[in-house]
Picture 1 (tube, rainbow, N blue to C red):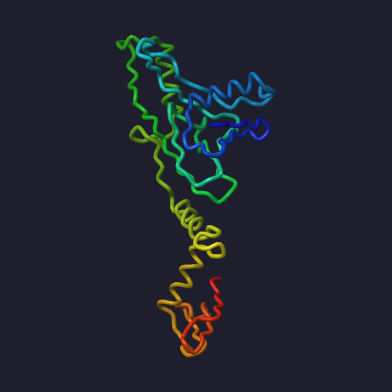
Picture 2 (cartoon, rainbow, N blue to C red):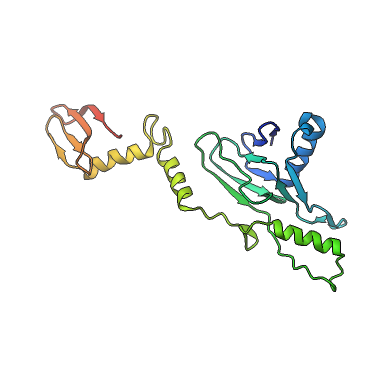
Length: 233
């Protein structure tokens, strides 16, 4: 998986074939970008919390909360796919979506696989220092309300649902190289349920609203179609 960083645009771009985003790896690569290029002259991309070892022997750590700051966002690869976000929590400081749309008309679903465990901060008897208690409280305050039941709430609103449906229906070449799904459905509906005329040599199929000719054909004496004109607009 390759990741590119554009400090001027404050954009992290995932390359073709990337279907899994490791948050720890992403943060590590950004640090390498700052160290090995001129990335240090741009505003920082992350404000991390966590990632500290719990039991070095067992290899357990506190989950990394990688907060995107200063307007930085992540753009998925240019393809319809499901992107799995693993090994940490990717958030926007102050709230918002850490991802921006692809440049092309693709459908991208984000699967946040990292579970979030609620932590109850108990003062006075838990053994936490005041600094540790303050750090955990600060983390809780920064988590967005969309973190429900330990996972990111990915319910789509009506506008997002309509946008996904429209992207599928109007995908160029979705059925044939010259026909989208919406256009194909219009022609099929006219052929199956529209009014017809000229069933001899020149059959015509109307749209179901009876406002235009969807299909106009020419047939020979054996009933074979020799020419077809369609209007799927």
